[in-house]
Image (cartoon, rainbow, N blue to C red; front, top):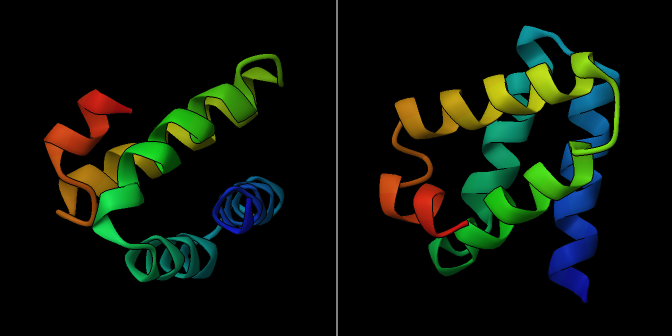
Length: 81
């Protein structure tokens, strides 16, 4: 449950303050998660924003894109999530 709380904290913080520093902070937080849990982050990111505003969904999409593009999350973890 601690992991899920950390994931939600990252998502909420990022969604509230979309900026370069926030993206860097979110990226660092995801890096601190074990790579074995990256698919959980992807899964929970999508579920967290599913019924939220289109802006929240776009922000989550940009975050996931940047994480995959920057090789923070592997394509395999992204697909699994």
